[in-house]
Structure formats: C-alpha cells, structure tokens
Image 1 (cartoon, rainbow over the protein chains, first blue to last red):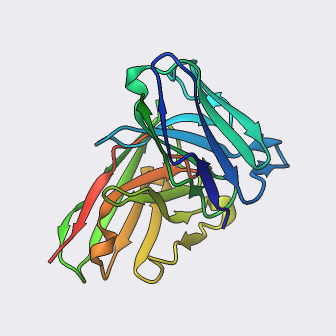
Image 2: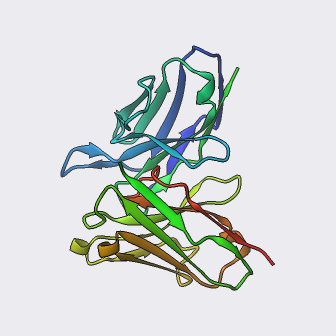
Length: 113
Length: 116
C-alpha cells in the first residue's frame, strides 16, 4: 500500500497569512498513461463530512475559493491557503487514488494563531 | 451535480449485521470504481473496500480489517452500491461514506454504531 505522510500534524497561522501543508507519498502517484497525479485534498470541519478541495493534485473542485492552491508532483505535494480566513479552521487530509487501496494521510489540524 | 446518498446505518450489537446502501445521482455508475470509506469517531479516514467496473470484471477488494466479514456489491442499473456487514465489532463503529474512484466529498455518510 502507498503510505501518505502529512506534515505538520498541526499548524497555527494568523488570519490573512499563508498556511502550507505538505504531503509525501511512499511511491509516485503519477499515472503514466494520462500523465495525471492521482492526489486529492480534503477539508473536514467538526461534525461534517470531508469536503473535496483539490483533485489531480492541482484542480480545484467547483466552488472552492481560489485561495486554496494544490501543487507538487511525483511523491511530494503541497496544499497552500494563500490568505487564511476564519472559516478555514479544519482538519485537512491528502489522499492518493492512483492504486488500490486508496490511502489517506493522517490529517493536519489547522488553527488560528 | 454529483451526489451520493448513503443509508442503512444504525445501532447494532456486536456480532450483528447491517446492510448499507448508496445511491448515486448526477452521473452513471457504469465506468467508475466504487468504494466504501469509513471514519471512526475522532479518527482519520479509512478505506474499507472497492468494487471495480464492468470492464474490470466487478473485482472486489477489501481492507484486511473487514475481509471475510464485509461484502461489497453494486447494481449499475440502479446506480447503487451496497455494503453487507456481518460479524460486526465495536471497532466497526464509524460513519461510512461511499466514494467514486476513491474520491470522497459527495455524500453525508451513514453512522454505524456497534455497541452491547
């Protein structure tokens, strides 16, 4: 199985500042037949289901604000929130869906400093 | 708009059974792999199992923690996915979500509580 490791486990950022969450996979999630990175990012607020933010490593889901930016390739990926808003407080998960089983990172808790 | 609606959760005693259902709206099940993913209270996301598409012979895969106890099935004509859960354990307590090609985000989940 591909192991997904996020860093840090928790993060406190001031309002309006940049937040960066890293995700490393134990092997490449690039699918060579279509040259796509099979990497997604989710946001989960307390009591709510996980919300899809980013797929194909950098494509924002419809309706997701453009302050959420996904980047990276191969085995190293980053979710950046360019200007933190109060409503961004949540746990964030990365996930690879390139092979069975799809696997998730352990989550990063984002708080306001 | 893609939507997945899970149902069938509830309270069951250890050793009991439940059958979960997931209906998809806004897309056709046919070309997609379909998964079940769960989240225990206060924990992260855990993949439970997958059924591939018709082209890949509806092959089933399971997490080691549920293999031999859970069975996934699908009905593409009804755009539906199922999870038959037998020999339930306390540690199976979780919100269960269905996912398309491994990707979550279109359903609210259904809560399964296994308790004496």
